[in-house]
Image (cartoon, rainbow, N blue to C red; front, side, top):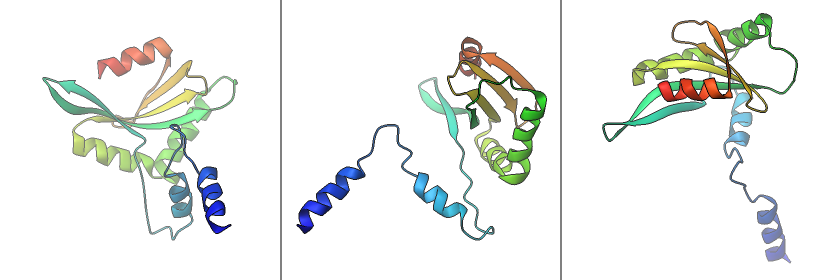
Length: 141
């Protein structure tokens, strides 16, 4: 009986390719003493240049799940959250500085049809892109 329970338990926790395997640890860590910081960078964009893999940008990602228009107040709240509440802006800038690249916030609509990009390194401005323009931006890095 014990072996069957173990196999059932393992099956219940099988992962998928899209699973965030660090999610439980991150959630646990958020509950710790506020003097303990674990600030991650959502993504580092890389390119091959002259046959060598090099970083080209640090990205902090945030998503909107609504279909409502995105206004300046909403965008300002995102910057405020990254700068003051979560400290993500500070850590992203430090990583970008160490890599000698720029840091960005990417706000994307749930369906990836609309993007708003904020240059953290230069403190703005927000720029709105459709999916084609966002792809052009990424290729330009």
